Amino acid sequence: MTDKQFRNVQDGTKAVWAGEKESLAYNATQVPVVFSVAYNYDDVDEWQEVALGNKPGYTYNRMSNPTVKAFEEKVRILEEAEEAVAFSSGMAAISSTLYTFLKPGDRVVSVKDTYGGTNKIFTEFLPNIGVDVTLCNTGNHEEIEAEVNKGCKVLYLESPTNPTMKIIDIERIAKAGKSAGAVVIIDNTFATPINQNPLQLGVDLVIHSATKFLSGHADALGGVVCGSKELMQQVYHYREINGATMDPMSAYLILRGMKTLKLRIRQQERSAFEIAKFLQKKEAVEAVYYPGLETHPHHHIAKKQMKGFGGILSFVLKGEMEAIKILLPKLTYANKAGNLGAVETIYGPARTTSHVECTLEERKALGISEGLVRISVGIEDTEDLIADLEQAFAHLESASSISN
Image: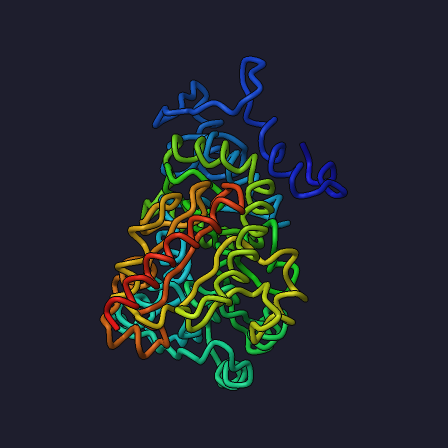
């Protein structure tokens, strides 16, 4: 199917059909998993044309694979991009993209509230190779603009942020980045292509940890980057040589998961909104972070640039880690794990999930409380999830009254 055929089609239909038909074989209705490492050519001239990228085809799986290509096409069409390149994990996609465009002496501007692994790249790995890194306060758009205006090679964003759920005015900040001549990159994992299309807001490159919502079933690692052909050729070349390629089985599993992406997102965010309102009423809760709440400081920005507010929220317990240790084990319909975006609801404190790589002091400097718990809401019935929380909080309240 061509891009033209998807021009007036909704995202749910794109998630099912995009990238599929071109990869089918033997009249099958599902994309096959192609495990072959190499591809045979009797015609040496044709082989060279394919190897040089002058003709469509496959030569070696580190370069490209039919199953992986189908996944790349699906994401490309959903994000309305010209090209997409898949990686072995979300962090492979993030790190490879940054290393593609940054060299010693370059400057990168980002925000403090990026995912913990990304933050480590900014605070540890890039400075080690002589890249100048400036991290701004996430909600301070004037500060970000001022730093970008000083000049930078790359402007890296994340919105909503993990796990504090802060929102950046993407169009505003991307405009500043482009004026400064920067490559503007954003991690769109939390929003997904269903709720946010940053390329339409002026961003150059969009990154997803495909392990999360795109897959949706917590059984495959992957990452993907998409954007213009010019920039993606550079990203592809870096991956081709450095080798962080997505394997075909993971591509198949994520492809299968993506067919229900819109259905999952809509159920997850319905429940997330109700859970956020429930948590706001609990005395043991100090704060609730969800962009769908009108009390969120950047709710108006989220409403402007997002089609939905997503299935992730976080909250802060007054009793911090001691309260977390009481509450979480009492939950029945929840995995306590370092993942998100799955069909099952997942709970986890920042210190064991998003920012496990950071020290207590580093998390405090980033404004992440030890009482913060991230919830990745699953597709279970909303009423059951709230009832589960209710009984868990009853245990917490009982334990608190006994200790007092």
